[in-house]
Figure 1: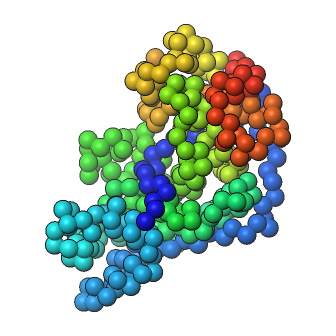
Figure 2 (figure 1 turned 30 degrees about the vertical axis):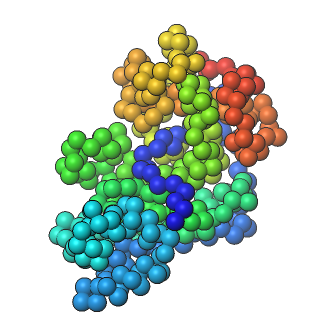
Figure 3 (figure 1 turned 120 degrees about the horizontal axis):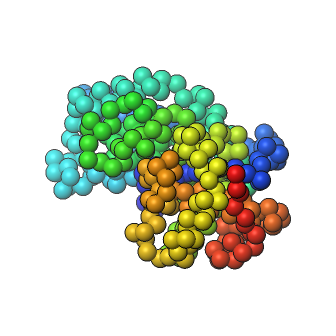
Length: 348
């Protein structure tokens, strides 16, 4: 099994429109005739509804129905085929999984929260149409498979860019995630605030974007800024109609703060000699999910340097209007992008 991407959906998926670069006039292409229909399959329903009296045969049939997904789910996520994790064997482990009281309760909670996914399927279809519009040569099966993993993983890509969505990571910010594992940083409030249905498509599409981009080309802050700025720019093209607050994973107050303090963010990075720094410890919270940006006012959210990187990439694309998204992805020189963007931070 060639797993393309398997990671928590706690990636920064920020997209914001900058000041003098007003998106109200942004052209949104007509993608209505592009064949890219999403199909959501409820793997968790089929798994938890297996007849325990004929469990072995049912489990085997389910694995045959979802061959690529099942390999990742059972081997890499649950570890049910690993003799160290499941010494009693795969079948016995999975029987215990689907009959365990806490797992049954979690399954029931997901079914109450998501009894019908028709609207979500329509949202995925729209996003997939934009993906095929901009990246017609990229594979895209249109398959979205939902599952639960007892809070192990939020989502992953597999096969022909099929998407797995962990519904137990989208039960709402009021769901007591921290009660189950208080020390788990992935359950911090600034992250669980986005664990809801509004963010499923955006977080899922960010997996596709991340797969397109690969890792940053360097280890300086400017390399991360431009790389993450590209990610945000691509996500904005794929979800042009989604609210900025969703794509940013910011509160509206944080969105407003960034817009009002763009020049101050840039000045801070310059004054602290961070732009060309390769000291990961100094700038990590400026480019990764974090409750705040160290050294800035308390109102500043985390990832402010990534937000600023998006402003730079957007300015670059306005200076180079004929540049395709494929060309933007291939352009790896962060300094050249900064120079050619003629970026000037907004002042309010």
